[in-house]
Image 1 (cartoon, rainbow, N blue to C red):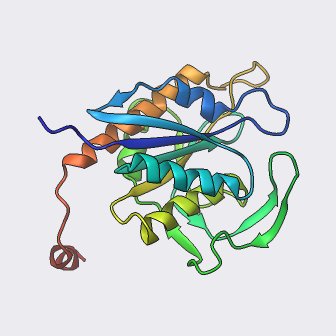
Image 2: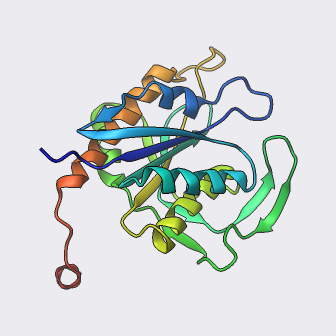
Image 3: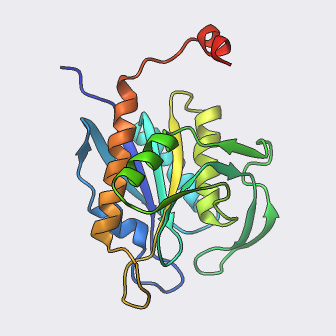
Amino acid sequence: MKKKPVILVTCFEPFMGQEKNASQEAVKLLPDEVGGCPIVKRALPVKWFDCVYELDKAIEEVRPWGLLATGQGYPVPPLLIERMGHNIACGPDADFGVDMYEHPIFPNGPAAYFSTFPYRAMHDRLQKENIPVKYSFSAGQNQCNCVTYAALHLAAAKYPALTAGFIHVPMIADGSQEGMMTSEETARALKFCLEEYAKEVDKPVRELDEYRRSL
């Protein structure tokens, strides 16, 4: 039986003095295989532009079919499924070593890309599981957006078979607010998303003429 292709899952390291990053803690808890697809995990630095370099290196090494990038968002749910990555970097990195001001991530890249992972299936699955989720059309201007845009640009320019997207997860529950999610709950939500991602492997790719007829 032919083994299914790899899905690369990225997260971020702690930053700004935090001991933990919610995305990293949740990704650590993910199984090594979901829906028959091997899951490879990589933590990225919250630094301009080391996160892009490390992302490209991970893709080159792993050669994944799919890429699910994650990052820490707001203190409470919902999970935010990012629909777009924008070609702009603005703000400081983790240790304020570099402070960007409206700088393009890739100077010759387009203004934006739409995510190519199965965002609708993921969204619907999380709703079905009663997990708060929303679409977002801006991942911000810091490293989360940087990785979102970089993943989609690298897919378009260097790894044409790769599909990719980004999900913001809530901060780790610390009792400061009601409704916060534990790392285990966030990992469970991400596993549901990966299950939907894995289902895409077996779906036939439409030919260009078929796609045009569907418009």
